[in-house]
Length: 357
Image (cartoon, rainbow, N blue to C red; front, side):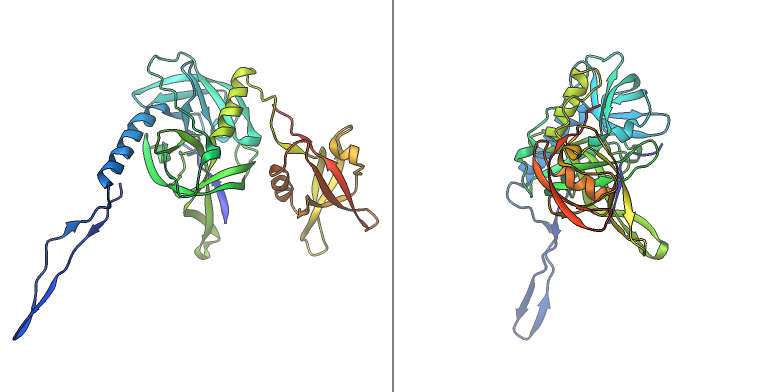
Protein backbone atom coordinates (compact mmCIF):
# COMPACT_ATOMS: atom_id res chain seq x y z
CA UNK A 1 0.00 0.00 0.00
CA UNK A 2 1.29 3.43 -0.83
CA UNK A 3 0.27 7.00 -0.14
CA UNK A 4 -0.57 9.91 -2.37
CA UNK A 5 -0.95 13.57 -1.52
CA UNK A 6 -4.34 15.06 -2.20
CA UNK A 7 -3.70 18.36 -3.88
CA UNK A 8 -4.91 18.51 -7.51
CA UNK A 9 -2.57 19.53 -10.25
CA UNK A 10 -4.39 21.95 -11.96
CA UNK A 11 -26.72 11.30 3.11
CA UNK A 12 -26.78 8.05 2.95
CA UNK A 13 -30.16 6.39 3.28
CA UNK A 14 -31.21 2.74 3.53
CA UNK A 15 -34.26 1.63 1.61
CA UNK A 16 -35.74 -1.75 2.40
CA UNK A 17 -38.52 -3.28 0.33
CA UNK A 18 -40.83 -5.44 2.43
CA UNK A 19 -42.20 -8.54 0.71
CA UNK A 20 -45.13 -10.25 2.45
CA UNK A 21 -45.98 -13.83 1.59
CA UNK A 22 -49.33 -15.19 2.72
CA UNK A 23 -50.96 -18.62 2.30
CA UNK A 24 -54.62 -19.72 2.23
CA UNK A 25 -56.45 -23.05 1.98
CA UNK A 26 -56.67 -24.50 -1.50
CA UNK A 27 -53.57 -22.74 -2.80
CA UNK A 28 -50.81 -20.20 -2.21
CA UNK A 29 -51.25 -16.52 -2.91
CA UNK A 30 -48.34 -14.09 -3.07
CA UNK A 31 -48.82 -10.40 -2.44
CA UNK A 32 -46.24 -7.62 -2.46
CA UNK A 33 -46.43 -4.69 -0.07
CA UNK A 34 -45.31 -1.22 -1.21
CA UNK A 35 -41.63 -0.37 -0.67
CA UNK A 36 -41.10 1.45 2.60
CA UNK A 37 -38.20 3.57 3.86
CA UNK A 38 -36.83 2.09 7.03
CA UNK A 39 -35.02 4.67 9.15
CA UNK A 40 -33.13 4.08 12.38
CA UNK A 41 -34.32 5.99 15.44
CA UNK A 42 -33.63 9.72 15.25
CA UNK A 43 -32.48 9.47 11.62
CA UNK A 44 -34.12 12.78 10.84
CA UNK A 45 -32.35 14.36 13.79
CA UNK A 46 -28.99 13.00 12.59
CA UNK A 47 -29.67 14.28 9.10
CA UNK A 48 -30.37 17.74 10.50
CA UNK A 49 -27.11 17.59 12.48
CA UNK A 50 -25.28 16.91 9.20
CA UNK A 51 -27.01 19.78 7.46
CA UNK A 52 -26.39 22.23 10.31
CA UNK A 53 -22.77 21.22 10.64
CA UNK A 54 -22.07 21.69 6.92
CA UNK A 55 -23.78 25.08 6.96
CA UNK A 56 -21.64 26.10 9.91
CA UNK A 57 -18.22 24.92 8.71
CA UNK A 58 -18.26 25.10 4.90
CA UNK A 59 -17.96 28.93 4.85
CA UNK A 60 -14.57 28.49 6.59
CA UNK A 61 -13.18 26.24 3.82
CA UNK A 62 -11.48 28.02 0.92
CA UNK A 63 -10.02 27.09 -2.46
CA UNK A 64 -6.34 27.86 -3.04
CA UNK A 65 -4.86 28.09 -6.53
CA UNK A 66 -1.22 28.45 -7.59
CA UNK A 67 0.33 28.31 -11.04
CA UNK A 68 0.78 24.55 -10.67
CA UNK A 69 -1.71 23.28 -8.09
CA UNK A 70 -5.17 23.52 -6.65
CA UNK A 71 -6.03 22.66 -3.07
CA UNK A 72 -8.02 23.67 -0.04
CA UNK A 73 -7.47 25.74 3.08
CA UNK A 74 -9.18 26.73 6.31
CA UNK A 75 -9.77 30.27 7.54
CA UNK A 76 -7.73 30.44 10.75
CA UNK A 77 -8.63 33.89 12.05
CA UNK A 78 -10.34 37.16 11.13
CA UNK A 79 -7.01 38.69 10.05
CA UNK A 80 -7.09 36.61 6.86
CA UNK A 81 -4.66 33.86 7.82
CA UNK A 82 -5.39 30.58 6.03
CA UNK A 83 -3.89 27.24 7.12
CA UNK A 84 -3.23 24.58 4.48
CA UNK A 85 -0.73 21.87 3.55
CA UNK A 86 2.87 22.73 2.70
CA UNK A 87 2.58 20.54 -0.40
CA UNK A 88 -0.36 22.64 -1.62
CA UNK A 89 1.81 25.74 -1.32
CA UNK A 90 4.91 24.12 -2.84
CA UNK A 91 7.42 26.79 -3.81
CA UNK A 92 4.79 29.44 -4.51
CA UNK A 93 4.70 32.69 -2.57
CA UNK A 94 1.56 34.23 -4.06
CA UNK A 95 -1.88 32.65 -4.40
CA UNK A 96 -5.47 33.14 -5.48
CA UNK A 97 -8.06 32.28 -2.82
CA UNK A 98 -11.79 31.84 -3.27
CA UNK A 99 -14.02 32.03 -0.23
CA UNK A 100 -17.08 29.82 -0.05
CA UNK A 101 -19.50 32.75 -0.37
CA UNK A 102 -17.55 34.79 -2.94
CA UNK A 103 -16.53 33.53 -6.40
CA UNK A 104 -14.15 36.46 -6.81
CA UNK A 105 -10.52 35.41 -6.28
CA UNK A 106 -8.64 37.22 -3.52
CA UNK A 107 -4.82 37.56 -3.72
CA UNK A 108 -2.86 36.03 -0.85
CA UNK A 109 0.80 35.89 0.20
CA UNK A 110 2.84 33.21 1.92
CA UNK A 111 3.35 33.60 5.67
CA UNK A 112 5.48 30.49 6.12
CA UNK A 113 5.73 26.74 5.70
CA UNK A 114 6.87 23.87 7.89
CA UNK A 115 7.42 20.84 5.60
CA UNK A 116 8.19 18.30 8.37
CA UNK A 117 4.52 18.55 9.43
CA UNK A 118 3.29 19.39 5.89
CA UNK A 119 1.67 22.61 7.09
CA UNK A 120 1.69 26.18 5.81
CA UNK A 121 -0.04 29.49 6.39
CA UNK A 122 -0.92 32.05 3.74
CA UNK A 123 -2.62 35.40 4.33
CA UNK A 124 -5.22 37.25 2.30
CA UNK A 125 -3.79 40.55 1.10
CA UNK A 126 -7.07 42.32 1.80
CA UNK A 127 -9.26 40.12 4.00
CA UNK A 128 -12.97 40.91 3.62
CA UNK A 129 -15.33 41.11 6.55
CA UNK A 130 -16.99 37.91 5.34
CA UNK A 131 -14.08 35.72 6.46
CA UNK A 132 -15.45 32.95 8.71
CA UNK A 133 -12.72 31.47 10.94
CA UNK A 134 -13.21 27.81 11.77
CA UNK A 135 -13.39 26.48 15.30
CA UNK A 136 -10.65 23.92 15.92
CA UNK A 137 -11.46 21.10 18.34
CA UNK A 138 -9.26 18.95 20.58
CA UNK A 139 -7.97 16.05 18.47
CA UNK A 140 -6.71 14.29 21.61
CA UNK A 141 -10.35 13.48 22.45
CA UNK A 142 -11.07 11.62 19.21
CA UNK A 143 -12.33 8.06 19.39
CA UNK A 144 -12.48 5.35 16.77
CA UNK A 145 -16.02 5.35 15.42
CA UNK A 146 -16.59 9.11 15.70
CA UNK A 147 -18.54 10.37 12.68
CA UNK A 148 -16.63 12.92 10.61
CA UNK A 149 -16.96 14.79 7.35
CA UNK A 150 -14.23 15.93 4.95
CA UNK A 151 -14.75 19.31 3.31
CA UNK A 152 -12.69 20.73 0.48
CA UNK A 153 -12.38 21.11 -3.26
CA UNK A 154 -11.64 17.64 -4.68
CA UNK A 155 -10.96 17.72 -8.43
CA UNK A 156 -11.85 21.40 -8.34
CA UNK A 157 -15.44 20.71 -7.21
CA UNK A 158 -15.74 23.61 -4.80
CA UNK A 159 -17.30 22.98 -1.42
CA UNK A 160 -17.60 19.20 -1.67
CA UNK A 161 -18.45 17.15 1.42
CA UNK A 162 -17.91 13.45 2.14
CA UNK A 163 -18.63 11.52 5.32
CA UNK A 164 -17.18 8.61 7.23
CA UNK A 165 -15.78 7.73 10.63
CA UNK A 166 -12.51 7.88 12.51
CA UNK A 167 -10.96 4.54 11.59
CA UNK A 168 -7.85 4.84 13.76
CA UNK A 169 -5.74 7.40 15.59
CA UNK A 170 -2.02 7.63 16.20
CA UNK A 171 -0.93 6.42 12.77
CA UNK A 172 2.57 7.29 11.55
CA UNK A 173 2.48 7.74 7.78
CA UNK A 174 5.04 8.93 5.26
CA UNK A 175 3.99 10.93 2.23
CA UNK A 176 6.22 10.73 -0.83
CA UNK A 177 8.35 13.52 -2.20
CA UNK A 178 7.13 14.91 -5.48
CA UNK A 179 7.16 18.09 -7.49
CA UNK A 180 8.33 20.85 -5.18
CA UNK A 181 7.48 18.92 -2.01
CA UNK A 182 10.23 17.08 -0.10
CA UNK A 183 7.71 14.69 1.46
CA UNK A 184 7.06 14.31 5.18
CA UNK A 185 6.56 11.75 7.94
CA UNK A 186 3.47 12.57 9.96
CA UNK A 187 3.18 11.16 13.50
CA UNK A 188 -0.17 10.77 15.23
CA UNK A 189 -2.10 10.98 11.95
CA UNK A 190 -5.86 10.41 11.95
CA UNK A 191 -7.11 7.62 9.68
CA UNK A 192 -10.61 8.16 8.28
CA UNK A 193 -13.01 6.41 5.95
CA UNK A 194 -14.31 9.75 4.62
CA UNK A 195 -13.31 9.98 0.95
CA UNK A 196 -10.22 12.12 0.36
CA UNK A 197 -9.43 12.94 -3.25
CA UNK A 198 -7.00 15.23 -5.13
CA UNK A 199 -7.92 18.78 -4.16
CA UNK A 200 -8.99 17.88 -0.61
CA UNK A 201 -5.51 18.61 0.74
CA UNK A 202 -5.54 21.43 3.26
CA UNK A 203 -9.30 21.21 3.81
CA UNK A 204 -11.22 20.35 6.95
CA UNK A 205 -12.00 17.09 8.71
CA UNK A 206 -14.92 17.98 10.96
CA UNK A 207 -16.83 16.26 13.75
CA UNK A 208 -20.59 16.47 14.31
CA UNK A 209 -20.12 19.37 16.71
CA UNK A 210 -18.77 21.42 13.81
CA UNK A 211 -15.21 21.45 15.14
CA UNK A 212 -12.27 21.02 12.77
CA UNK A 213 -10.38 18.06 14.20
CA UNK A 214 -7.94 17.50 11.34
CA UNK A 215 -6.59 18.60 7.96
CA UNK A 216 -6.98 15.93 5.22
CA UNK A 217 -3.61 15.36 3.62
CA UNK A 218 -3.05 11.83 2.30
CA UNK A 219 -4.89 8.92 0.78
CA UNK A 220 -3.62 5.36 0.58
CA UNK A 221 -2.74 3.74 -2.73
CA UNK A 222 -2.98 0.08 -3.71
CA UNK A 223 -1.62 -1.81 -6.74
CA UNK A 224 -3.83 -1.40 -9.82
CA UNK A 225 -4.02 -4.93 -11.24
CA UNK A 226 -1.33 -6.06 -13.66
CA UNK A 227 -0.57 -2.59 -14.98
CA UNK A 228 2.10 -1.98 -12.37
CA UNK A 229 0.44 1.30 -11.40
CA UNK A 230 -1.54 2.29 -8.34
CA UNK A 231 -5.05 3.48 -7.55
CA UNK A 232 -6.62 5.08 -4.49
CA UNK A 233 -7.53 2.55 -1.81
CA UNK A 234 -11.20 3.27 -0.99
CA UNK A 235 -11.92 4.45 2.52
CA UNK A 236 -8.33 4.91 3.71
CA UNK A 237 -7.33 8.53 4.12
CA UNK A 238 -5.20 10.43 6.62
CA UNK A 239 -5.41 13.82 8.27
CA UNK A 240 -3.08 15.92 10.43
CA UNK A 241 -4.57 16.28 13.96
CA UNK A 242 -6.01 19.68 14.81
CA UNK A 243 -3.78 20.03 17.88
CA UNK A 244 -0.71 19.87 15.62
CA UNK A 245 -2.34 22.22 13.11
CA UNK A 246 -3.16 24.95 15.63
CA UNK A 247 0.27 24.70 17.27
CA UNK A 248 2.33 24.92 14.07
CA UNK A 249 0.05 27.46 12.36
CA UNK A 250 0.06 29.58 15.50
CA UNK A 251 3.86 29.57 15.56
CA UNK A 252 4.11 30.48 11.87
CA UNK A 253 1.80 33.45 12.44
CA UNK A 254 3.37 34.60 15.72
CA UNK A 255 7.00 34.27 14.59
CA UNK A 256 6.90 35.78 11.09
CA UNK A 257 6.70 32.50 9.23
CA UNK A 258 8.97 30.47 11.51
CA UNK A 259 8.48 27.47 13.78
CA UNK A 260 10.51 27.79 16.97
CA UNK A 261 9.42 24.59 18.72
CA UNK A 262 8.93 21.51 16.53
CA UNK A 263 8.18 19.09 19.41
CA UNK A 264 9.89 16.45 17.26
CA UNK A 265 12.94 14.33 18.06
CA UNK A 266 16.22 14.10 16.16
CA UNK A 267 19.49 12.19 16.41
CA UNK A 268 21.80 14.81 14.94
CA UNK A 269 23.28 12.73 12.11
CA UNK A 270 23.29 12.72 8.34
CA UNK A 271 22.76 9.22 6.97
CA UNK A 272 22.60 7.20 3.78
CA UNK A 273 21.07 3.79 3.11
CA UNK A 274 23.52 0.86 3.24
CA UNK A 275 22.70 -2.28 1.24
CA UNK A 276 24.00 -5.86 1.39
CA UNK A 277 25.49 -7.75 -1.60
CA UNK A 278 21.98 -8.62 -2.82
CA UNK A 279 20.92 -4.97 -2.85
CA UNK A 280 18.71 -5.21 0.24
CA UNK A 281 18.88 -2.28 2.70
CA UNK A 282 20.44 -3.25 6.01
CA UNK A 283 20.68 0.06 7.86
CA UNK A 284 21.49 3.73 7.77
CA UNK A 285 25.16 4.60 7.38
CA UNK A 286 26.33 7.62 9.35
CA UNK A 287 27.83 10.10 6.88
CA UNK A 288 28.38 12.89 9.40
CA UNK A 289 27.65 13.70 13.02
CA UNK A 290 26.42 17.14 14.11
CA UNK A 291 29.02 18.56 16.53
CA UNK A 292 27.58 18.85 20.01
CA UNK A 293 24.39 17.03 18.95
CA UNK A 294 22.72 14.00 20.57
CA UNK A 295 24.60 11.41 18.49
CA UNK A 296 27.94 13.09 19.11
CA UNK A 297 27.29 13.17 22.86
CA UNK A 298 26.52 9.43 22.77
CA UNK A 299 29.74 8.67 20.88
CA UNK A 300 28.23 7.65 17.54
CA UNK A 301 30.94 7.72 14.87
CA UNK A 302 31.03 8.42 11.15
CA UNK A 303 31.10 5.11 9.26
CA UNK A 304 28.91 3.23 11.70
CA UNK A 305 25.55 1.86 10.54
CA UNK A 306 22.37 2.47 12.54
CA UNK A 307 20.26 -0.70 12.53
CA UNK A 308 17.72 0.03 15.28
CA UNK A 309 16.36 2.97 17.29
CA UNK A 310 14.52 2.30 20.52
CA UNK A 311 14.66 -1.42 19.57
CA UNK A 312 12.80 -0.74 16.30
CA UNK A 313 14.74 -2.00 13.25
CA UNK A 314 15.60 0.73 10.74
CA UNK A 315 16.81 -0.36 7.32
CA UNK A 316 15.66 2.60 5.23
CA UNK A 317 15.53 6.38 5.68
CA UNK A 318 11.73 6.26 5.94
CA UNK A 319 11.95 3.71 8.77
CA UNK A 320 14.43 5.86 10.68
CA UNK A 321 12.21 8.91 10.24
CA UNK A 322 9.14 6.98 11.37
CA UNK A 323 10.94 5.63 14.44
CA UNK A 324 12.02 9.14 15.47
CA UNK A 325 8.54 10.54 14.78
CA UNK A 326 7.17 8.33 17.57
CA UNK A 327 9.67 9.66 20.10
CA UNK A 328 10.01 12.92 22.03
CA UNK A 329 12.87 15.40 22.44
CA UNK A 330 14.71 14.69 25.68
CA UNK A 331 13.78 11.00 25.65
CA UNK A 332 16.64 8.55 26.23
CA UNK A 333 16.60 5.60 23.82
CA UNK A 334 18.94 2.77 22.78
CA UNK A 335 20.49 3.02 19.33
CA UNK A 336 21.98 -0.16 17.85
CA UNK A 337 25.00 0.20 15.57
CA UNK A 338 27.17 -1.96 13.34
CA UNK A 339 30.79 -0.83 13.49
CA UNK A 340 33.10 -0.60 10.45
CA UNK A 341 34.82 -3.75 11.78
CA UNK A 342 31.54 -5.66 11.67
CA UNK A 343 30.82 -5.66 15.39
CA UNK A 344 27.57 -4.61 17.05
CA UNK A 345 27.15 -2.15 19.89
CA UNK A 346 24.30 -0.24 21.53
CA UNK A 347 24.53 3.28 22.93
CA UNK A 348 22.01 5.34 24.86
CA UNK A 349 21.10 8.63 23.17
CA UNK A 350 19.29 11.58 24.71
CA UNK A 351 17.30 12.78 21.71
CA UNK A 352 17.44 16.40 20.61
CA UNK A 353 14.76 18.51 18.97
CA UNK A 354 14.26 18.74 15.23
CA UNK A 355 15.03 22.33 14.25
CA UNK A 356 12.19 24.64 13.36
CA UNK A 357 12.06 26.71 10.24
